Amino acid sequence: MSLSKKSTVIVENLRKKQMREAISTGKRLDERSLDEVRPIEIELDVIKKANGSAWVKLGNTEVVAGVKVETGEPFEGLENSGALIITAEVLPIASPHIEPGPPDEETIELARVVDRGVRESEMLDLKKLVLVPGKIVYTIFVDCSVINVDGNLLDATSYAVVSALASCKLPVFEIKDDKVVDTGKTQEPPITTLPVSVTTVKIGDYLISDPTTEEEACMDARLTITTNSKGSIVAMQKGLKGSFSIDDVKSIADKAIAKGEGIRGKLKGMINIG
Amino acid sequence: MVQSRSLIDESGKRTDGRVIDELREVKINVGVVKNADGSALIEFGKNRIIAAVYGPREVHPKHMALSDRGVVRCRYHMSPFSTDTRKSPAPSRRETEISKVIREALEPALILEDYPRAAIDIFIEVLQADGGSRCAGISAASVALADAGINMRDMVSACAAGKVDDKIVVDINDTEDKEGGADMPVAYMPNLEKITLLQLDGELNPNEFNTCLEEAVRGCLKVYEIQRSSLMEKYFGDEKGMKEE
Image (cartoon, rainbow over all chains, first blue to last red; front, side, top):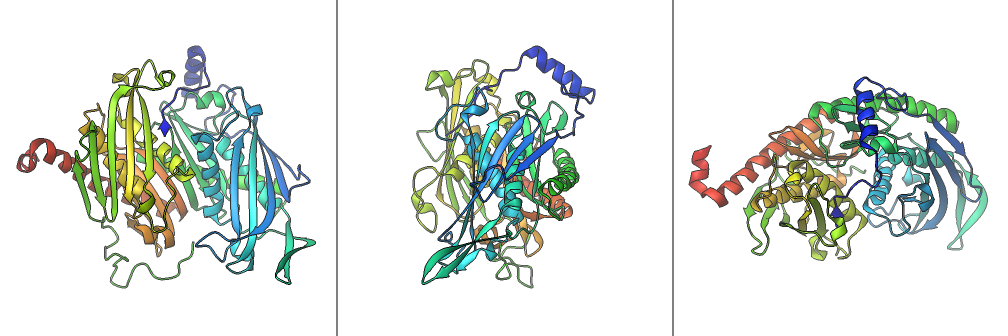
């Protein structure tokens, strides 16, 4: 059951007031402008045991994503496609407010929204990852661990998944005598586009990009928009108990497309792909 | 997403015979669950969904209560027999996410400050699913909340729009959702003109996105009229409701 809950992160009223005053003058408490995204740092191939991995820092938010490739049966109804499974976990090391245990609804939403962006963009051409049609396909797991929480987990996790996938090397499997054999060779993943997630939140009457934990404690509503390399929107998710006007949504969408393009350029540079 | 066959024919008719800006048939019955404080059964195409509201009532466990406002608890659940292949009755990750987005779609309409230390429980049971069940569930729950006499700022009406055969169509059905190009559920407060739920999967360019959003909102307004008349019918009787127009 989904329950409206109190914020676990407490921000003093004085600090909230400072934040609102700063935002009304177009500056944030960390000196960023309202639509400025924190610096993104990506370290690739940090986990040698994975087929691909990325350690992403978005300001102080840190996420590690690892790709593991296996073979298995295709999903029902998608007999001629490889299987892509994206998970996310917020580790208890990541914040004093996280407790071990089964994922709560926010974590489930995190994993599902990140998955939706990557899946709907058709970033990976899953049709090319079939060994025996209807029977054996590549199964690609992208598991994410949030290492440090400082807001905007949705975008940070999405960048980690995209970086890890785009830079991974897939093992080449072959069928010999009805058995799957790992040839020991690797191949480039069939990447078609780079999805970029951009989250905007509403604090009072103002829209700000890439919120920190402190800003998230004050936000009324959130809208995450994922765009592909063509500049089309491929996934969206509104969150929290606030609301947006139609004009808000249109301006957030325009910004997400423009900002997404810039971030995509940065990601391409860091992942080192065309 | 694979587009294996044409989903709109030459005369502009969709798989279920509708034109692109036509909603499926929508019927709402208010007060179907006798024990609940408020309830509604919505038939939205082949969707059959009951929403029941209990509350304001005491919060258990007590530490979940908030001292300055009420809490909303929401469960969206699909019956095992509601889908083509049996659905396990245990709540899935999909249902967990939908319960959350539905709660967040309804909360902006509720004046929770009027119910400190209390809970308002919303149960949405999908008896038969036909695509667009989260939207139908929100529309039914909103009527059930009004039926329960919960103080509200506005109704919440929901409807999806999407892309089928490169055309923007309103109220995506099951086939169009599975085979079409994009699905965008929207929930809207019609008098306050605010969007309270917005999701999308599938590809839309900026122009398509704007049209899709406007079409979805237009669909929400049509649903709103049906929600309104269903409540009118229960509380004022059929004819009087008409006269008040």
